[in-house]
Length: 251
Ligand code: PGA
Image 1 (cartoon, rainbow, N blue to C red):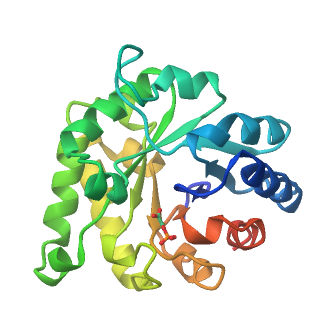
Image 2: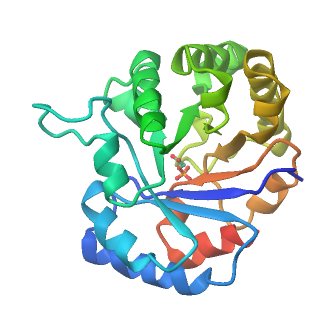
């Protein structure tokens, strides 16, 4: 069991129009109104952030962005900045999700710029790392994750690093129904915590939450949360339905 307050985060990806998001958010608000011992966050598509934030205003559920651009403002058609997310009521932002890396040319370098942009607006960056199936089969998991952390978080001070959340999401487990075994997940989480310790010291490593992501469901969250270094989950598919997400929150 984690020593840190758990965070259960829902990544709605490119699902839900404004009205659909509003319906899910209001149901979720009712279902988790009595939950105080777990932090909860949902990341709707940009077009639904305002309506979701408005509905969740008097609840404990935080709202986050799924991505951001590192410039504050400018002629960058299609982009959303950290101050825009902040002003829309976001507290968190997901950065470096494997789908962004795979389909939208996200690199460790762009992750680094985005993390800095988020921190400068006091948004909590949820930085995603994880290996592909081929990398795991070639025993490259640690090397890949270490490199994503080193380059993605390059130059951060310990003072800044304490505000990070890291999400370990093995690419082969996202949306596939395959979950890492609890031992596989714990092994990588422990490795990530060791890296944080080496780079930023004990105190930072002890406060940074490391979430697991990849086919998290109501029926596997309990065993994942029983592991010492798993501090919560980043949930995709199962977060789209308020009832299944609430069941995960109540692991
Ligand atoms: P999944 O997605 O729960 O649908 O596997 C997780 C994620 O991509 O964050």
